Length: 347
Image 1 (tube, rainbow, N blue to C red):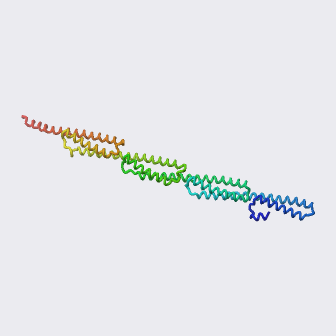
Image 2 (tube, rainbow, N blue to C red):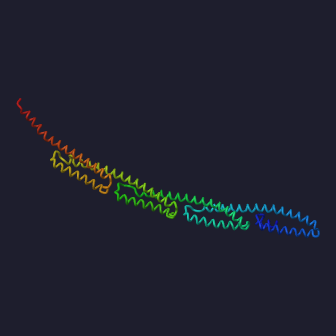
């Protein structure tokens, strides 16, 4: 028995080998005892009984110790394989596709469990090998769940960063330098959206089969839709500002064209009306031409109406000024006539 222990460096021994060596050693011991006590049956019986008790006690103690060594070996081996698996799982680069991760992990675990079972089979029977293999497998399932969670988080970060980058590219492509017409706005919007999805796809196209892909693609569309709505509002504000400034400029121009530098009052009412209508038509036409591409905008009708009302007010003012000028022309001769009459009257 000692030689068997030394052969295994006093480590764990397969139980059936342990039993076989004990049976062999016990048989040899009794053979020697029978040879020594040949012809002494009473002494042989007594010695045999004592030897049996001694050998059985020694065997029981050594076997119990061997069971502990076997268990310790199996648990240590299980821990080693678990640590190896943990190191391998941590080395897997993420993010990766779920399919690739599953294939990689399954291939590694199948080989690891096979190697583990093979090493155990040299020391423990098949039934115990299955018990330890199943225990290791359950522990490995926790590692698999952890690496899957790690990959899911990495995918989430990738999708979120890609959406942010796509939104930034969209913003850089749709900078407004001035108010845009509907057709111009649509072209600019398409340029921005195409550029945004190009950035998103370049980062995420390899993950298009992931469950989270469609949700994040929809989130990108929502993000871009909000940005487009804001862009529309900004464009409307620019258009409104431009129309306000244009109306102001045109009114100043109309006032100058119908002012004293261009019209000498009083003048014939019909002639004045013609001149005022010409200038008013020119101003209205200029507004119409400037904003031809924006005629469908609600601001167009709003500010064109404001322009026409203000023009009508100025026209009315000019007509009143003409009447006043006529009055001044008539009043002056009458005033002089009254003075002459007063001077020529008898004193």
